[in-house]
Image (cartoon, rainbow, N blue to C red; front, side, top):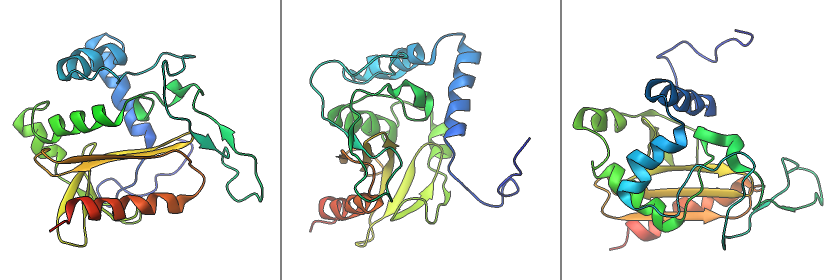
Length: 209
């Protein structure tokens, strides 16, 4: 390969969108079907996630939806123009973050995933097996197979996942059994400090006495 590895396998951890692209390609190779069809057949239809889908290339979000704003990676440029990017083609992120959803659907999905309704027990245990993920996202303490864990100041640990795309940061976290979930979204992507709000909201929600 052109680039040297960041570290030897098994010695450290690092997030990469490429891993999720490869996972999507593996699904298509094994099933012989488009990833969007498999997501619909296995997840969104059975769970009744009517506002969740993997968009086709060139499509925009139909119906009413929040606006999202971005400086298109010109975060450090003074007075850089802010763009409304809500109608940008999200399909370029594909398996690594191209899905469109709603807060209600995200809560319902993670409730089912964490609660053991989507995976057999052996895969569920592997999913919850984490490695340290220092400096990945503020407050996040571990990363497993598609889920992350975050220990809150009150001692409780919440589970879920999230990330960013053009103009949007979204995270859905909750209890390990999936019975208590909270989805959050910020509709601007150029100030990293924005995601510092997420731990504060989680603490307010899950550390209440």
